[in-house]
Image 1 (tube, protein in one colour):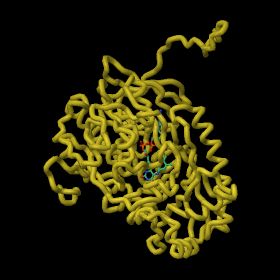
Image 2 (cartoon, rainbow, N blue to C red):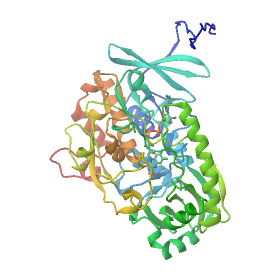
Image 3 (cartoon, helix red, strand yellow):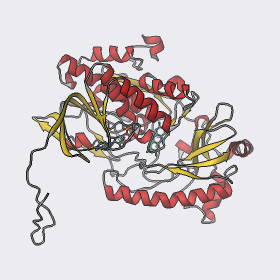
Image 4 (cartoon, rainbow, N blue to C red):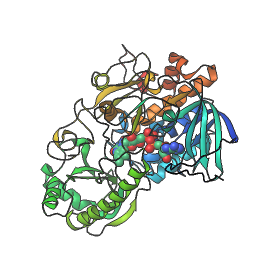
Length: 481
Ligand SMILES: Cc1cc2nc3c(=O)[nH]c(=O)nc-3n(C[C@H](O)[C@H](O)[C@H](O)COP(=O)(O)OP(=O)(O)OC[C@H]3O[C@@H](n4cnc5c(N)ncnc54)[C@H](O)[C@@H]3O)c2cc1C
């Protein structure tokens, strides 16, 4: 209970200091059991650490499950480690397709990842916010949480911040960059939604008759009824016509559809775009949610009336979690830049190597809008190659702090480089590396910054991660181990 002590003109409440119970003391504490956090917790436990994973939701998967972002946009052949293991687990149950891109069922991810976490002995605490960070002499010692049971503390030898927003590292005083370096603008938010039933054969007939109406990039233009893969960016002309008639907002330039669907099925629509909002502010998240629902009403009515195959479709589901693309990036020992990615720089302390469907200079989901317009290279302009890039361990180590690693979209990169590292297969590879490093740190009784990098790389390779060291010429663990 707090006493109301508001003095004239001062709108604050005094919260007296109090003791809070320490409910656990673990080796590795993972905050956020989303894309990166699920891989991090699994890797930490498999490598021998007593691991507790905390999430504000009641499920695992974060953006990939609750935000319905259920598509890996790289081919199966370019996936590794725990990411591939999750895909295989889902595909074996019909919940994912091992194709040139990988659509998956978010419910399948929740089940497969949860089972693996439980089998590995990870303990979970759902419906729990991490609200503050416990730091002593620059070393993170644990996290303060809040949930139905009140305010409590959890201590840990190593904390992994996989909250997406870098909440724990920021709470420990880590320096960070919010959004784009030049103006702090962030990529747009989206609420993804699902519609069905859709007659995919009618979409295919339209796509085949109007190839110019779709992205020129083969990876953004996949409709394979036999394999049950839909991943389409386009309908540019129909959307433009709807813009001119006032049926669709002028800043919507294309439709992005994906899902597991044969001749008929349900498709996810990732076309809502809300600009000028900050995912670290609850007022902005609330505004973005309401604006997204307005856009969903408009887009759903439009596709039902005008997109071939959608005549019988209704809205089946809207994501329960806001799709936040960008907020804080924690400043680490190494800030991964576009010059690193573009030159395929090899690092002595590499913890993951991957191939991104990106080129330097191409913006993905620009904070300035215009996505899908004729001058947007990523969606409408060019055929994108796959380019190798690597992430060093230094990008997971917040500068000036120890006892903590970051994983997922809050790692230390620039805004441009984050276009390469932010996708889910990358986030999972980074998560696997963070979890493995945390376990080795505990086992060797050394802080994360002093983990034996050779041992880390060896362990990651043994566990099917992809790592290419300077001077090496191997490109996958199949060849490397
Ligand atoms: C709309 C949208 C479309 C995208 N499209 C694609 C795509 O097509 N393909 C692709 O591969 N990637 C895509 N991405 C990028 C990718 O999905 C994300 O960058 C990636 O999932 C981020 O992973 P993460 O682990 O950092 O965060 P998340 O997966 O979001 O996980 C963070 C977790 O932390 C929890 N959490 C947050 N704060 C706290 C706290 N304080 N206390 C406790 N728990 C907390 C959350 O509940 C969540 O479970 C898209 C992203 C968005 C938003």
